[in-house]
Image (cartoon, rainbow over all chains, first blue to last red; front, side):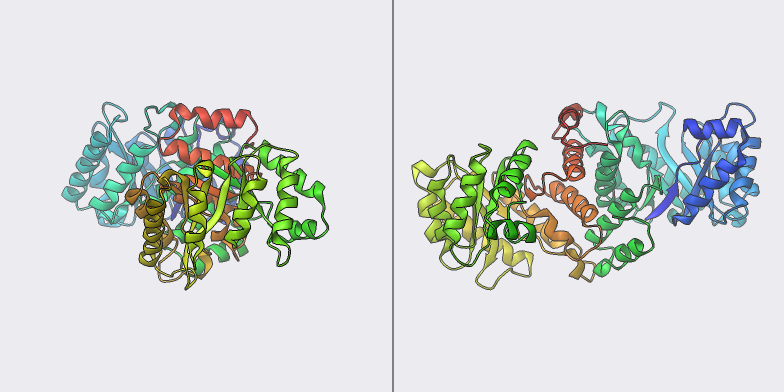
Length: 269
Length: 269
C-alpha cells in the first residue's frame, strides 16, 4: 500500500489556522510525525485563495526542513503545481489532474519531460460536469485520461486514480459503496499497472464514529484493488486494519509485515 | 447479521474457572450483558469432560434466569445437544452438526420433528479426517450435509454453515484468507437461503492486536456472504465495523441502522 499522509491540508480548520498564522512549527511537527510513521508521500495543500504559490513554497520548505519524505503537491490549480515542482528536493506526487478543462493538456507535457519522469500523478475522475454520478461516466473520464497519458508517453504505473470517494450516508436504494468499488474493480482489471487510490475518510462524512466507517471502507477498497491511499497515517487502528486486510488478501506471507509493523509501533493494542 | 454471542464457553479460561466453581453470578452477568447488547443467540458451551449434560443444564438455567434471548447449545456431542433441547424455554441454535461420524443421522431426525422446526442448526464443515485443507473438500462436506437436510426435510434457511475459520498466521504462498472466503462465496451462490456463519476471532489466533485482524476479517467475510457470526458482542468496535460494512454493501439505506445502533450505544467514539 502506497500511503499519502493527509494532515497538512488547508481545508482542515486547525491547519488553515496554522497557515494563516505562518506557524512553521505546526507544519514541521505534522510533517515529521507523519514521515516517521512510514508514509510514501506527505500531502501539501495550501487551500488559500490568495498567494497560493507563495504559501505552497513556505509549506514545502517547512516540510523539507524536517524530512526527506517525498511531497504530494496538492492544488486544484495545475499551474500552481507545475510551479511548485522545482521547489521540491525530489520527485513527489502531482496532485491532481482530472478531466476538467485543459488540466491534462497543461500538466502532461510537463510531467512527460524526462527530468520529471519520477513524478507520480494523481488523476481524479471528475470532469467539467463535476463528479459524475455513475460508474460508467467515471470510467469514461478514466479512459480519456489514459488515452492522454499514452499520447504524451506517461507510463501507466506513474498514475494513481482517485475514483472520487464520496460520503456513504446519502446513498439509498441498496446502493451502498458498490459504485465506487465497482469503478475500482474495473480499473484494476482494465489497467493493472495503474494504482488505485482515493481519500478513505471521504466515505464517512456526516456519520458518527467515522474511524469505524473508514476502517470498513479501507478493507473493501483494498479488496477491490486499492493499493494507494490518502489517509491519516497517525490513526494506528486504520494502519493495523489495512495491514491485516493485506495479509488476508495474500499480500503478506505468514503475516510477517503485519507482525513487524506491530513491533515498530505502527499500530498498537 | 445474525449474532451469536461467544463469551459463555468453557474453552475460555475465565469461563472454565467459573464453571468449575459453579459461579452462577459469572454466567448470569455475561448472559445479561451479551443479551442487552442486542444479540440473536447466546452460545452456551460447557467444555467439560465429565457431567457435560448436568453442566449444560446448570448454565442454561442460569442464562434463562436473566434473559429470554434464545440459546445456542454448543457441544461436540450431539446426544448432549439433543438432551439439552428440552431444557431450553424456546427454540435456539443446535451447535453443531458436521460431517463427522453419525452426527447428522443422529441429530437431523430429531431436528426434523415438527415441534423442533424453529431450531436453527450450525453445520461445521469438517469430517472424519478433521478440518479439510482445501475449499473443494469443505464444499463436498457442505453438499453432503445439504443432501441429508433435504432427505430429512430440514429447510435450508435453518442451517448456518461454519466453513471452519482457521488462523491466518500459518498461511503462506499468497494464500491469505482466500480459501475460506471462496468457500463462503461458493455457498452463497449455490444455496442463497443457507446462512453463512463462522467464529470470526479464530482468524487472528497467534497474531498481535487480534481486534484489528478480526475487524478486517469480518468485513471481508460479510463481503463474501457471511450473514451470521459467532463473536464477542461486547466488542463495540467490531459491532460498529460490521454495521458500517453492511451499509457499504447496500444492506442499510441512508445508514439508518448504523446511526440508530450508535444512538443505542452498540458502538461508540
